[in-house]
Length: 212
Length: 212
Image (cartoon, rainbow over all chains, first blue to last red; front, side, top):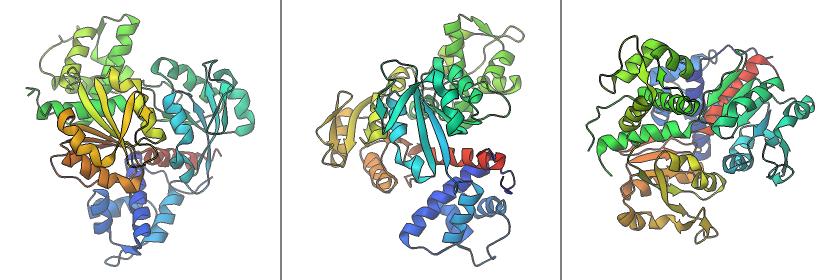
């Protein structure tokens, strides 16, 4: 169990953005950063940065700024990224296969430990070193794996049933790529990445500009 | 040029979510929907739904609700999804290849018309029927294609230079999958899909729960 206080989702998203900036800064050899400079890089003002970092407890000196390395470590701990998490991935189509091979997951401490699909043509094949199991085996496979995170990379109509199977198997956090709203029990947290939503926003902007 | 008024991004995202719900309802044979029912399905309250739909102009009768088909058409038009948009995709790695084959783009009226990568091993090969061109050819290729949307599916360090090349080629809307903040001119709109951000939020939730 962690002693970290509950941090609201919009703050978590900004902390993750700061983490990206701090990683870049470390690679550039930057040792110290002010809330102004970090804010500028992340697209927020200094007051917002200070407010967000106050969720991590007291540190940093007014007018002196933050040390990049320790600040990065602090955010990593607050986000629970230091431990490593097992992940079940459901869907071995083009998106699922890409996610299974996506290096960013491992870099952030997420290990995809099992891959599932309900297409008999895909079951038994290997993707990125992982064998594809049938969706009906999620619960039995997860008895040993004990993963708490599930990723749904399946078509919309299949997503709700998959979510149910994941929750039944003990998953409490779902990252959903299917363009449907999942109905899940209250103890389950869902984050949605909806590409059609992103496209809709871009499309509206374009239609306003009349560029095409 | 469109006569649609400028709609704020959070409203656009909710309108895109309503569109997903309305599509599901049409498939289920539902002909009419109240703002309450649509809100429940999309996870918003009825007042929010009515406020969002007011951006589309006056229609719907109090106490009667909306006709599913016409409401869907209205949102499609407001989002500029009826016309079809050409898209340049940069990055032919695992994510880029998945996006090139992703059916959702075409369904929403987005046609990936050219694929670019700066890896000589990938240039000249075909992905989903498209030949991979070198990144240096973005501008010359887009003189004929005249695409206004670019998708960046490249690693973080390469993303900024790619964004510059896309903007130089006439792109005004960018969907960025690289986990870095792009610096672009004011006339360019950027939407970011950052998987590490999503994972960070999930990870914090999990660390709070102490499930693993």
